[in-house]
Length: 154
Image (cartoon, rainbow, N blue to C red; front, side, top):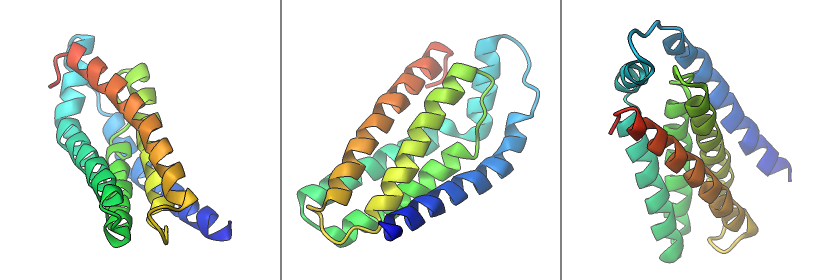
């Protein structure tokens, strides 16, 4: 129990530190229509490229679990924490709903990644729980991606 809390605290610390640094980007004044502001933010934050990294991390975790490779699982989970932290550091966006959706996704990914990075077995409760949390994050990330697409960000 203590180990899980320590890793979750580490993920929260990473997200907080990156959020403090990235919060400065959220203070930028964007111009034009709502869609243009979101597009400017997305370009500055490299959100599409970063979210692709997150998606690749998730695919790698799933494949590692399928192949029963615990070292790969833990390594890929660590990568997910890092990439989710990068995305989190670029919040807020000019769109509150988009910010909330991305926030949920990145926090889910960081929490899941942090816990499964400490797993000792692919079949452990820790990994199973992390995969469920990742799925919740994927739903939020998909909503955010659709919102971004509706603002012209691809």
